[in-house]
Length: 103
Length: 335
Image 1 (tube, rainbow over the protein chains, first blue to last red):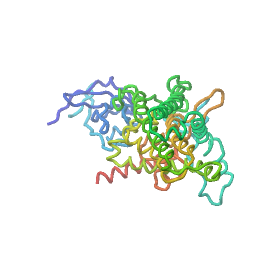
Image 2: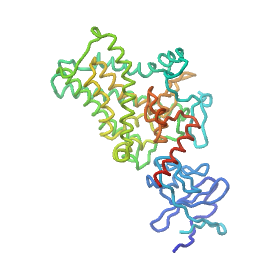
Image 3: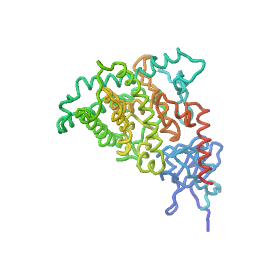
Image 4: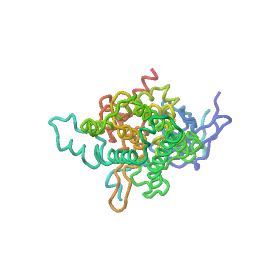
């Protein structure tokens, strides 16, 4: 059973920014692309379990702060070693000035 | 100095030198004798500056800071501790000099630094959550000890006649040629050991410690797991079968012990004032290995990475090939 939950406000995120969102035991990363589109992935790197919200967001990718593995946050694809496992993605929508994800 | 005259920096902050990593022109036809001479005697080249510097350090160590063979014929704490202390001091001076200038004083800020960010000071991948403290720990607690262990063991064996020593007076050509072959042997040995510890079970348990340094600094060079140190310094075991002068052994171990400092400096060049700079491109290929993991396993004149398709010369084309190789590998693993 999934539900839409508010993750952040739109003005929490500018282009090429990421914020962390925790819900219960789970943690997520919410991104805004250079075009102003929003994306949501698991919050922890699939390799070193570091919070991706502390990583560098640039050109549609997020770079893990721990070992510099790179993911395409739009597709979840692991793009450069040492990360090999793709990130899980989540549906995301904007309602008013709220960013919501379906989890 | 203006780094844009020597390379470009992308939005991510990665610096890409204009000069590509290249192998010596041995296989070129028609032969290029001038290019070969430039590779052998140029600056930077095969001999200068680094191999000459390490040979010079080994010479000074042999002349002024190595116990006599008579002393080393008997295992005794005094001379063994002396070798350990001398190697620790050498390490502190050489690695420390690079770190002090480039990372403590930040004398040239991030100019010519491959990665525009500074090493992590809060990263739980490292002991004490600090890259430099972690690197110092592994360097001195394991690296210098194992380096000294190989030196003590081999000198003891040589002093007791278990290994065959040669003299410069009796075999001058052999002695000189062996000096020239040592960096080549070190490259071959390093490649074999390096591929071995990238085997996934060994990588996870051993080599990942060194690879935590994705943004390396000088002290990252000898920050290895003890098993990796043992394999790495086993390069000196060649002298179990190859007759040698004691200076060959010192050159091999000084080379293995100190060359990781410039090799992991993280900068393409160190500014010396005005337009003068110390060329550190010797570390560019290995920096790319730390950044991308699956390229440039070797680190010297033998083109093994080119033969096996893992060579990254620093160009965008090489990077694209490497990314494609990574995708192919992922696809194969998922299938």
